[in-house]
Amino acid sequence: MSYIILAILFIFSGFFMKYSDDLMDINNNLPLASVVGVLCAITSAVATVYNVEAAYIFLAILIGNLLALKVDGIHHIITLIVFAIISIAIGIPELNLVILLICILAALSDEIGHEMISKITDNKFLNLFFEYRFVMKVVILALAICGVFNIWIFVCFLLFELSYVIAGMIFEKVN
Image (cartoon, rainbow, N blue to C red; front, side, top):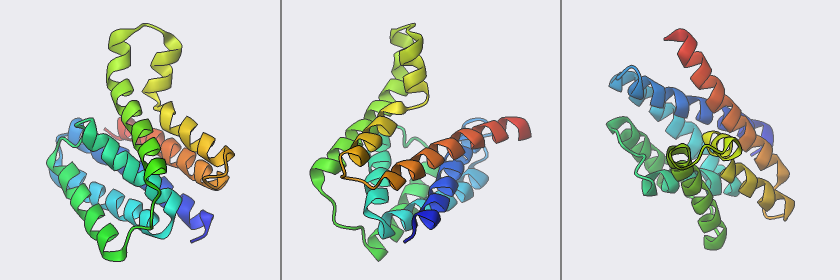
C-alpha cells in the first residue's frame, strides 16, 4: 500500500475518531456516533491489515485506550468489534511484541497523562505535552529515526493527529 493511500486512511481515521467521540460526549447522539465510529474502525482496520507500521500504531491506540478504561461507551464497543472483525478476517501482519509493547506504553502514557497531568501540576510544558498526546508522537519519531519505522509513517501519524484536532474544531463550529 502506498504511503499516499495510507496517509488518507490515517486522516480519515483521526477525523472519524474525534468526531465520533464528540458526537457522543457532547451531543449524546449514539446512532450517529456509532456510524462515524464504524467509519473510523473501517479506515483504521484497512490501514492495520495492509501496513505493519500502521498495525503497531492502531493496535497500540486500541490497547492503550482499553487499559486506560477509555472504551467507555457502546459506540466504542461497536467500533472495536468492527475493527476486530475486519482485522481478524483479513489478517494482522506479524508484529514484534517488544515494538508493540513500546507503542502500547506510549499510547497508555498519552491517555493517562491527558487525563491526569493538569490535576497534578501547573507546568505549562507538561500540560501542553499531554493535552496534545505527544508521547506517541515522540516514540514513533524515535522508531523512525532508529530505522524501525519508515519516516513516512511518522508523517501519516502526524496527519492522523492533525485531522483529530481539526475534527474537534469543526465539531465546535457546527454544534
